[in-house]
Image (tube, rainbow, N blue to C red; front, top):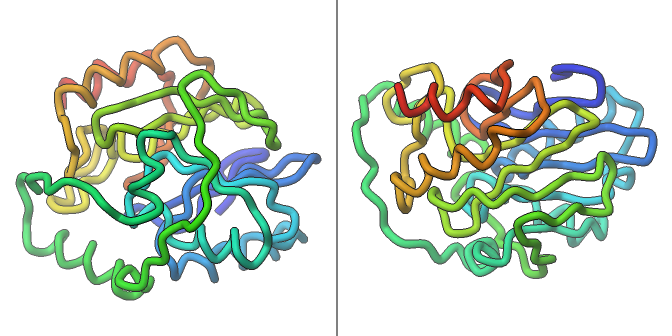
Amino acid sequence: MKLAPHLHRIGNDVVSCYLVDTPEGITLIDAGLPGHWKDLERELQALGKTADDIRGLVLTHGDSDHIGFAERLRRSHGVPVFVHAADAARARTGDKPKTPAGPMRPGPTLKFFGYSLRKNGLRTQYVQEVTEVHDGDVLDLPGKPVIIGMPGHSPGSVAVHVPAAEAVFVGDALTTRHVLTGRVGPQPAPFTDDPAEALASLDRIAGLAASWVLPGHGAPWRTSPAQVGEAVRGA
């Protein structure tokens, strides 16, 4: 789905990832679930492109619902996969601590897990080779994505700022639709390693110039990054 010039979403409000299309090629942000591969192919076809036009995939963190088709893309098309060094092991092995799920309601929870099953969420292939990145890195990829460390949801959670798309991709640093309760609007995401650290990290994007703040779960959010911290903390 096209959101704006250069900016496309793959998936829906339950789980999503993003595509940045530029004359130099395509950068992907996150890889959703394995079954989003077909959604990616459809989006590329609509653009008159193929997976061979993808120059890199940047992960906001290493959780399974963000790395879905990453290994397939890397193995089949040679696309490098970038992840913060602190989440590299999580992306390669799935190793992560147990975290409290917090509040949930049966309907939205079943919808989340049902959607994950339909999108082959139980067949995650972990990423065998990753390129590690760090806070402040500017990647040599279309759109020149900038890495902003956002620890909290996981140690290596990042935001990815792409000025050409006027967008900040925040992964699970926040959500605009809680997958376990169905509540909509900006709020903390569930399954977060360190909730207090995640809230503090929101200030790290406040000075960025963008008109889109894009989470991995929930509706795209048209706002200034300067408004994010106050909105999420007040949820």
